[in-house]
Image 1 (cartoon, helix red, strand yellow):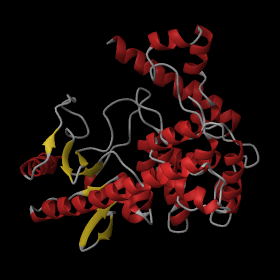
Image 2 (cartoon, helix red, strand yellow):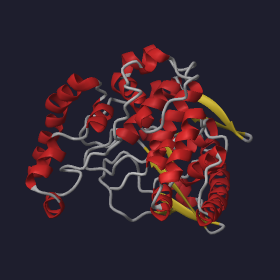
Image 3 (cartoon, rainbow, N blue to C red):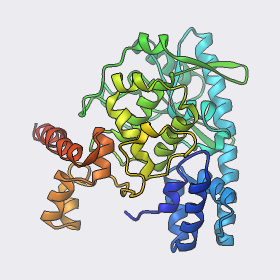
Length: 368
């Protein structure tokens, strides 16, 4: 898949001098503006791309500017309606003595992004205890939401998605009864009571919402965005923008000692997002990124071996040597982020100790 470095460096809320210089330089060498816009919209990055192009004073084609302005207007409308419906839904849950925790983009629109339209999302995710999830699902169906008929496993971590059209905008929710899919890699156990006890409260107009604390937020964004099962879709740049921006905004409030103790893979992986969009020089302590080579950027690449792609597809696209390389020796940046490793020695250890085990588990799963 073609890379768009211009889009990568825009994966953040706030720009800075070095980043703006990179934006202007990449604009001068961009040779595929249509492809860039398509990728930006697909990865939830169109509003951030527009923001950074304007702030950098970049020279862009007039047609690209018009397209981004039109996309911005659409995202503004969608964001406004989504948050209005979210507030109504949370009030409904609270009136029925249910306790929702708002996840991912829906939470970040309130806690991180200064303009909710900067954070597009396909659906809004809400976590409940297992005892409350079904009741919450029924409440939304009674209030006019339609349930998806797409089949999902009976023990899936979220219930069938729900949707309703409001002013020509399709608003979707996924109600979770667990945080992670029941598939390799084996995710950490989740203690609902502990999550609730350590959670934070924020306000959406007159309504109080429950969200994760800083450490749980970063860990969940990392697990969801960069450590999905190998069969799932690749990470999107908006996932990187979430983590980079959250880290920079709350850097001094985050307990990095706690992150190192409880979520070491996440703590080791976050600095490596520098290779997507460089860290803000004045906001990040040097020791936080001491293991990162700041002068030589690694290529941010996804995993493209088996079982991410079916073997029949891989054979049609690649030689057997290439398939083996993609499967057993993935890109260094991806391995470092996915397994929380650093350096050449860390790469080799991750490949031979952890990655081979994942491939083996999937082979065993598919054989069974």
